[in-house]
Image (cartoon, rainbow, N blue to C red):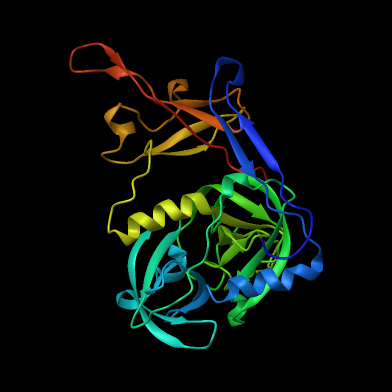
Length: 327
């Protein structure tokens, strides 16, 4: 454990405890005083890099001693030929190549060329993080490499639409609007260039990959609302990208608009999607294509109009998708 302070306690999560279900115990990160923050930051800084392309810049987290680096997809999406420049904490600059990307989670893996003996970041358990836990954000905001800010975990399981009032990174132009769910929210200042950098706990473990900020008005700077991809998800996706595996995601395949009186209207259906195969059609005035609000406040239930199957029986489909954040 880095620094002094109150030792981390044990947090237990019980699922169906009365019926002999699963109980998982977490080890909470310790609460520390401000004097210990420099030690934590110093222990992580060598594992955080800057990444630049022809049209933008961001940050990254070292995954392995031989040069694999985790970053955001939107940081490297504009890289010509998948080529980037990786800048390490000691100022060493090397060429890097994009190995794999997953736009759905906004993650990508880059391999820095001709390097060895790097210091990989230590990843922690993002599921163990609690609202109010202390965190540090490391990266290269506005090109200022090695910057560190501090704050707390403000919320969990946030869903945002990056690029539509809540941009991922204003320095990355031309990125499509995308919805990202399951994010950690923090008030640790995150600014353009922090994308792909580390959000760490008081043990110096990476518990999130900084990916987006909320902005106000014409401002593109921090207003105390930043978002990070949880480390548990990031580790899983990064491992698949390193191995050259495809990252799959469940998808209904519909676009929706808000409906009068609540719920949503199916506005479009993606060709070849599960929704199309289930004969879900774009809504006009048909109530059958209107989604209904779930009794669970964090979900929307989307129902498609039933249709005849090849055997003459009725068929349909339903799915639950994350709720958008309220304005």
